[in-house]
Length: 254
Image (cartoon, rainbow, N blue to C red; front, side, top):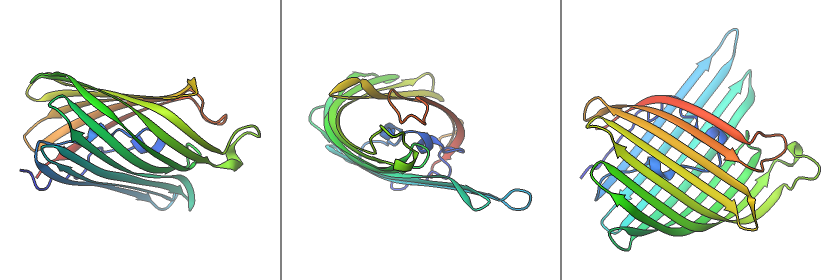
C-alpha cells in the first residue's frame, strides 16, 4: 500500500483552474486500498523593470478502499503585476464513490469555486449519479457517468451587461466519459470529457475535454503533456465561448 504519493510538480504550468468551471476529478487516482497525499507548489517573481508575482498551490488527499473512495483536493492561483491583481482563482472539491458492483459505482460531489477571469465571485455545485465501467481490459478502459447537479453562481455584477443575471440557480445534467489507453509499458493516454447542459434549456451547456499523454521514464518519474479545451455555450457577454490550454510537466513518486 502506498502511504505517501508526493507530487513535487504535477504540471509545470498548472493553468487548468484559471479558465474553466468544470474541474477534472479524474486526474487524481491511485491503486486499490491506498492512501495518497499530494501537493504541487509554484512561485515565480520578478523585480526591476517588471514587478510580477505568481503563486500556485494544489494540495490533494485520496483515500481508496474496496468499496469506498474519497477525494479532497483544491487549487489556489494568484498572478499580480506592479501590485495589481491580474488573476485570482481557487476551488475546493470533495468527491465520494461507492462501489455497488464490479462495474457500477455511485458518485457524489461538492465543489466551491471563485475565478476572476470568468467573473465568478462564487460558484457552488453539488450533485450525484452513477458511473458504469463499460470496458475494462488491461490496456484499454472506458467509463461513463451520468447524474444530476445543482449549480448556484454569483457573478461580478460590475462586469456584466445590463440585461445579464448576476445570480443563477440551475439544475444541470452532468455526464462524463473517461478513457484510459495503455499504448505501451511507458506511454499512456487519458482523455476525459464532461458535458453539463441546463435542464430547462439544452442550448445552454458546458463542455470540457481534457487530454493527457503520460510518458513514464522510470517507475518513479514521468513526463506529462496536457491539452484542455473548455466550451461554454452561453457565457457572460464579455467572455469568449472557447478556451484552449496546453501544459507540460513532470511528476515524481516516493
